[in-house]
Length: 173
Image 1 (cartoon, rainbow, N blue to C red):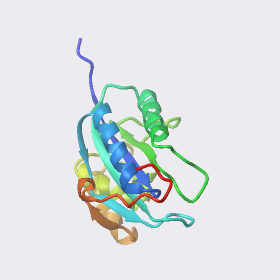
Image 2: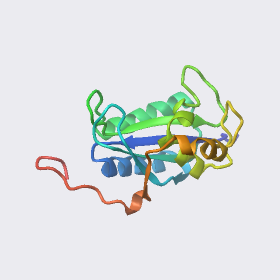
Image 3: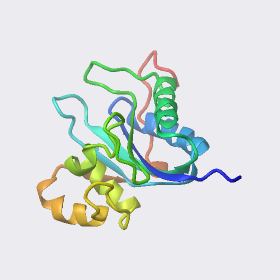
């Protein structure tokens, strides 16, 4: 019997050597998911201060249950040296949508989908006709209606064209 796959959208963000950490996450997600695609990379100011964030969204297909996928995302964060609690975040991976599933314990779909430009814009880019599991509206429609009120994004281009910043003395190469 064939195992069915589910389309998922994952948000990626970093403000500590962000190009390096986003590339690390992209490689790990490409190995974890099937049929992957990535959005452009967008820069935005950090909420509450700190270095600006680079954000993007990855779309793929998985046979993993949502809980197992979230655990795999946490493992990828840890492999990148995930740090929390300070102004810098090495890597943040969020399961934004898991098919059409709506789940309160897993917070699916993530509230960020409709509230944050750095999530909604790349979602509209990757899945313009994909429907939000709660509203039933297409991501492209949500972005069209929200774009004017969601300022502050800068399109940085494709991840593969971005150059990692040089290592500080004592950093890993």
